[in-house]
View 1 (cartoon, rainbow, N blue to C red):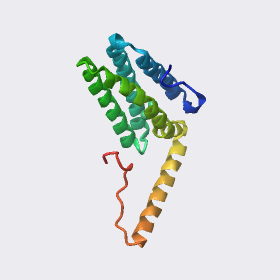
View 2 (view 1 turned 90 degrees about the vertical axis):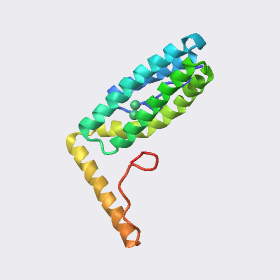
View 3 (view 1 turned 180 degrees about the horizontal axis):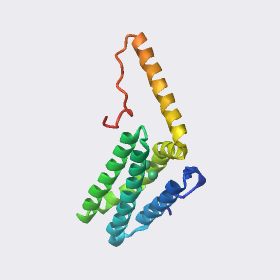
Length: 167
Ligand SMILES: [Fe+2]
Ligand SMILES: [Fe+2]
C-alpha cells in the first residue's frame, strides 16, 4: 500500500512546486515498497530527489527574499540530515530504522506542504508589488504587536520564525 496518495489536497497551485511534490510522493512510495535488498538504493534515490527539491525551494526563497526563509531552510536541512543518518544506519544493518523513517516522512510531508510550502507557493505566485505589500502588512502587524507588548510592560520580543527554528 502506498505510504502517501497524491491528492488535490496536496496541490499548491504553483506548477514547479507541484511537479516536484508529485515526484516526492513517487520517491517516498518507492521507498515504502522497497525490500531489504533495495532499501539503500531507494533511500539514495529519495535523498537525491530531496536534495534537488529542497535546494530548488531554498534557491527560490533566497532569490525572492522570502521572509521566513530561514525557518523553512532549517527544516529542509534537518530532514535531509536525518535521511543521511538513517541511510548509514540501514547500511549498518538497522533496516527497521529505514522503515520507520519512510512511515514518518508521509505525515511530515503533509504537514510541511500544508504550512511552509503553502506559504512559499503563495509568495511565489505574487507579483513583485504583491510581495512588497505582503511585507508591509507583516511589518505593520509586527510593529502593532510590539507596541501592544510594550503597553503591557512586556519586553520587546525579538522577531523570529518561532520555536524550533533555531533563530
Ligand atoms: Fe516542497
Ligand atoms: Fe519546503
